[in-house]
Image 1 (cartoon, rainbow, N blue to C red):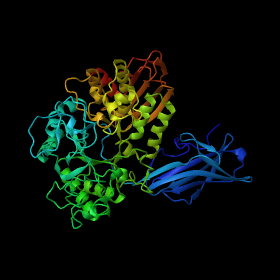
Image 2 (image 1 turned 90 degrees about the vertical axis):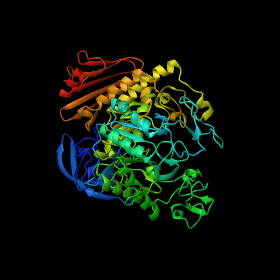
Image 3 (image 1 turned 45 degrees about the vertical axis):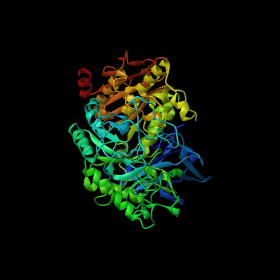
Image 4 (image 1 turned 90 degrees about the horizontal axis):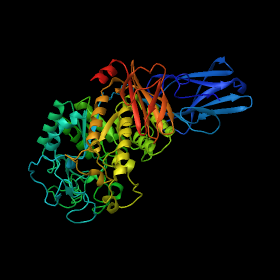
Length: 624
């Protein structure tokens, strides 16, 4: 049965995906003549409105037993959820969203979404890059002595020690063990990152804090002494810039540490913190139910007192003229990743963006959002992350879930729908700058996730004792190669979590935060990731269109197209070979990875893949 409307077909919606404010969109509805419809309209809800509005449609032609109805719609910044109604002499009817972008004639179903962004919304051009995420204490140690390091930290005895995982008070406990990784050490490894094709270095928090993860900030204006000094940071940015690598910092602005200059619960600092006096300069930053011990904390963690982000004193300190944001950009940073961006207020997000763009129009603002960020609700209202006045882009957890789900046996249809949903609801400039990761400091190591025994809620003691068997590891590496190929060729920017390219394994915090295994890397994986880094420079991946192609259970393929330059990607997660029929005209194009086609058919081996290219770039790469 022919669909009456498909939001992904330009015959029904004149432009796929999100549109700029003021940009007209033509909607075309296709109804059977047999309905005898004498009227139709587009019905929509704008943002959080509950009272629908409508736009009348005009019957424009009758063809092959169908009547076509059209209207033109121009929206303001925000999101529109819509469906269609039509009128007959027997009563009204509806066209509602069914599977994917397709509609159905029914009174029940879903609503489509049209995202409208600010017409002047500009995002730094980053689409052909690669991000490398580093947990600073665990990447590389320069061995240089440090000054003013607090004495209540436990220095690990060996670089290869398992991270401490016992909770509670003591010498070597969770988050209190330090391995000596530092900023100078990262700078010394920049040539290694260059070989991987890295263009953006994203650092987990580097500011003074009293845990190795540093998400409990103690002083936003000082580098943690275990990592070095501000001068070391400036030097790192300078050396990175010489190699074409930008540095992005992690900003934690929804809470501070209780052991901080600002709260000072432990009286570590000479400053008068909010916990010490109601007359403190920082008192208004926090949310006290009853001072000093009854205060609002992040997710109930008492060592992480929440801040009032719209308090003028706090927001000026972070994002005012000469505040934290601008201070570190002027020291050499090229952007910020905002921790729990969906827990920050609209006011602070907009102020941060303004502060950044005043210093550098090309500074990159990335937010941590785990769901679809275009229609995310948090703290009781619809968020404006991607409308053009807040974030440039977000961490792409939906793609992460799609890749992992597919490789662990999920439906191909689910993968395709997740990808298409993001492409349909995000502004194109946001899509080109998506942080496409398959692992972060908040998730299991991808190798463990793909091939290890599921954690199933078992505690840290069990997790600490786990190691992949040889068979698990071999299978995991095969699946990781497929995962990374998808990650590197989907729209957005791939983000490599340090050590995944070396074959690191481990469950969640703290086991996903082990030390990089210098000298014991999986050399085959390293070679693979260097190949992927080169692949990222190809024109089809620089903002090119994504076109889904042939798929069946366990197999999927798609095209990336940028003008005349095209790349075809096919993967097979099955334990048996699969044949994929190529598009007409693709038989003699350049094979970049995998076996060549025979008579227009690609045979993809078990856990295998193929990448082909069309254009001069492909021939140049194949001959390089």
